[in-house]
Image (cartoon, rainbow, N blue to C red):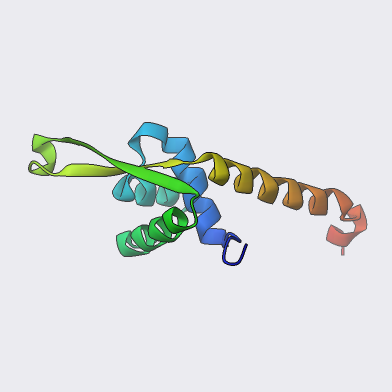
Length: 109
């Protein structure tokens, strides 16, 4: 299917959504990536990637309850779908297969 490959940022965002599980919303994803990867990305970049992932069927979303700490606004929460889980597992298997084939001398130059 065309357009279903994951980019590196999309993979990172999906992994973070899975990690955060029930608290995966834009700002939380952005902060977690900064914390774990020391990589700064803008909230608009996160939202654009989440929109792409949702259009591919790799994440779905729902709205949480409104909270006073957010001025009555609701969080837009995301979760990885079964299709998303499957594509993440495929990417992991592909990378592991390549890593396992690299000769040890390749890094001893």
